Image 1 (cartoon, rainbow, N blue to C red):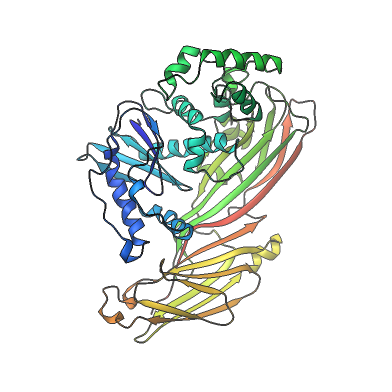
Image 2 (image 1 turned 90 degrees about the vertical axis):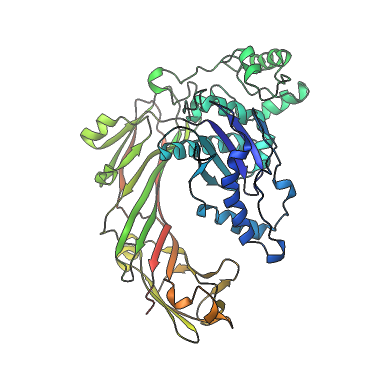
Length: 521
C-alpha cells in the first residue's frame, strides 16, 4: 500500500525517510515542496521571497535521517511567522500526483511535521491517512517518554532515531501494508525510553538497545538497524539481558496475555486501579446567515485511560442516547455483537490511553450552545461589521455550563488596510494573515459587536474588490460538561476483578471547522 514514507518538517527539511516496496528518490516530493514553498513565500516579506527550483533535491536511496536538503539554503523565519505557516499547511491538497502521474503523494500535517506517503497503486486515500495518523500517535508516545515536551518536533525524532526506525519496521510490513499500530503490542517488542535504559546506555558506551532481547533475534536486530555499522552489538545484548535479570525484568509475551486480547499487556499491575472516559465532540459544519445547518455535523470520540490490574479485566459501559453511535468506528477490543444486541460497550481495555470509539452525527436539529447573527457590508467608502452573539440559555442554564474561549475569525480581502473596533470589544487585525480576530473569552451575556473596515487607497483598482467577496466567520469555543449529541454514560462497571477501581467520566464540546456565513448586503 505504502511504497515509501517521508517525514518532513514545516521548513521542508527531510527528517526521516523509510522505503518499503521500492526506493523512491526525494525528488518525487517536489510537487509537495512546491506547495510548501508557495505558502512560505506568502508569509515572507516581498524582499525575502524566492522561487523553488526543480531538481534541487538530492536523490537518496535506502533509509536516512537528518536530511537537511533543501532547507539548508532557506532563510529562517521568526516563531510567530512559522506558526502562521504551520496553520496554513491545511491548504495543500491531501493527494498530489507526482512523477508524471505514476505516483501519488498522500500526506497529513501534525504539529510542525508532515507525514508523506508515496503510493504507486490504487489505494483508498482515507486508509493511508488513517495509517499516517496512527504512526504519529505511536511516535508521540515513544518520543514523549524521554522528554518533557508535548509537541513532536524534528529534534525529538532525531534524538530517538533508533526507536523511530524500529517502530516503522514493526508498524508497516515489507509490502507497505499496516501491520500493528497498537501501542501495547509494540511496547512488548520495542521498549520505550526510560531511566533504566539511559543508565544501561551509559554503561554500554552510548550504544542504545531498544529491541527486547526475548522477542527478537539478535541477527534480525542488526539487519533492521538503520546503521549498517551495526550499532546494536552482541555485547550490548548480553549486558542488557544481565541487567534486566538482575533488576527483576521478566520477558514479555508478544501480543498480550492471549491471542484474543492481543492489544493488552500481559503483566499490568497497579497499586491504584482506575479507568476514565472522556467524550469529546467538535462541530464541523457550515451554517447559513440564519443559523441553519447547510452541511456537516458533529464529530465525536470517546477516549479512555485504563490502569487496571489483571490479565483480562472486563469493562461494561451502558449509554444514554446509544443511537448516537449508529455511525461509529470502535477499537478492536469492543465486542460488537454485544453492542448490536444490547447497546452496551463491553471490552477488555488496552493498558493506558486509547480511543474507544469515534463517531459522526449528521443531524439538522443539532443545537449549538450560542446564538449568532452577523453582517459584513461593504460600502463605497468603508466596510461595516455588525455581530450579535449570546449564549443559548436553554443549554447553558439547564446543564449549568458556560461557553468559554469564544473566538471569531473573519478573513478579509487584500483591499482592507485597517480596522477600527468598537470600544466595547476586544479585537485585532492580523494584516499579514488578512484576519479579523475577535477574542471574546467567556460568553456570559448578549454582546453587540461593531467594527469599521478601511480600504486602501487603490482598493478600486485591485482584482479582489471587497463587496464582491463572500464573508464567512470561523467560530471556536469550548463547553465543559456538555456535548451537542446528547450522548452520556449511564453506568461504567468493571467486571471479573477482586478490587474496586476508581471511575470517572468527562464531557466537552469544541468548535472544530465551524463556519457561519454573514449577511453582506
